[in-house]
Image (cartoon, rainbow, N blue to C red; front, side, top):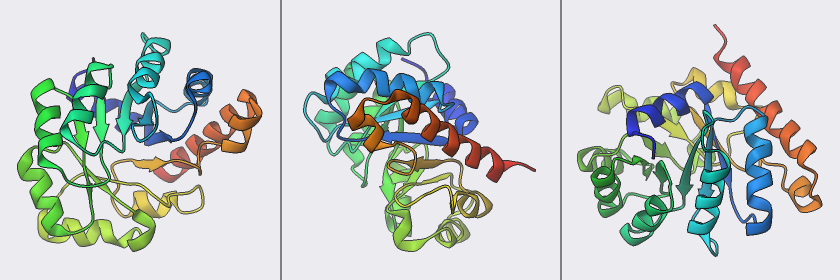
Length: 217
């Protein structure tokens, strides 16, 4: 498992966490490999489907020795956090704040990003030991909400997720995002269903290009 500081560095370098949701066990490894080849360096396999731990372990084995970190998303409770960490997840992302999840990750040295929307949730997460904050769902509040949170709370690090696209990713970085999370805007699920890994790779590469353009000086 990669340490939390190294995970943060990989996420910052990548600029984007690819959210892999609802992909079956037979497809998850080739999809993860294609997205990695597209230039994404942080892959989030969601834990809300069947055999999530097995999928995470398989992707972790496939990408071992590369610069890509593999984590788990949609982690709702401490037991699930423990399960995905045991499977090899280097980071854990939740849609909400659960202090037991945060403490479990801290205990094992796993990078953790709980989902927040309000200042109260943000402070609760930070006090519990969150590494960064996931602003979710970002499309509900838009890029300006990053500054709205950072205004009273200081220079907190925020990863907006949910509604981030190639068209608006620059707005989120301009507003102060550390990185962004992206699911269907990055992962071509039609191509996944068709087994077309070239299209999966191209879609990921296109989003990476948009991120790089957004962060260019």
